[in-house]
Length: 211
Image (cartoon, rainbow, N blue to C red):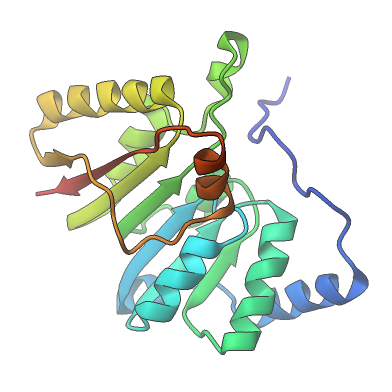
């Protein structure tokens, strides 16, 4: 049986024909080519949702290249609309699962990696579906450039503590990372950030720096 690579919805509502045309034009215009990884600082966001953070960072850091990795079609449509509206030229989207991205671009290195409010899959039987686990962290941290940063944010305390536990293990084994618990003012409040506030959930964040 083929391993399932993605859990959750690919879209939350049906896209209009105009949104489909817009996203197709965006994907044709902003094609990810391997040579872009050698030119500038590269930032990726894994699971960008509606793209609030990705759009904000790209607009404020035009000297960097931003890549969103997420099969969520409604988020892609929103990013495409904002990119053309604001004439943002440094965002690229890979609209498939992370595993396919690394299969295609297996020699890349990044300056920053963001994973913000991934689905916590709180039920015990579903925890194996979580995006951030030891295998993922080992893989993506190996692709961080020197002085590169990994950012993680969630409002699920158990998920956060589990990620901290994995990271501390990696630090003990490799001794080349610095862990910081942080609240970054540069990140906008996304849909899921606002939802956490609405339900009075504590938001936990961390930043991991590669020496």
